[in-house]
Image (cartoon, rainbow, N blue to C red; front, side):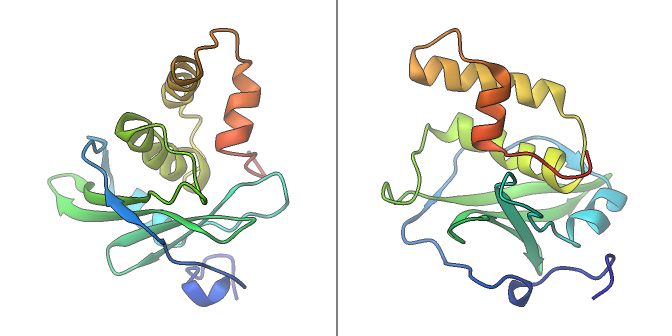
Length: 160
């Protein structure tokens, strides 16, 4: 498969659907350009154990699975709008055995971060700072190292 060929469900050796999908009430407002959408549709495969996400697209739905377990965590529907595409609905895994949820604000940020930082390779500095802030607030610890928080949630993206 060429590096430009889109990843599909069959591109990954193990994927598990969500056990308990729950709608996300807070969605990112970002509009991704048509060029971004072309890149998003190619997906992303974790290249080593320090990467946390595998991403692929079927129709207009972006599937985000944890790379180690294959568990589906987010399913995000993007629809055409003026200037590109926007997330119009999303579900998150709510099974506490599979994922520790920190609320819709966190999920909203993570969905945008995975697409922006992991799939598109953007620096996403504001989103990363938001991740650290939300995680610190949820944990009650104000001194969490940003790098540790980011690696725990996002992993490292090879080649960035």
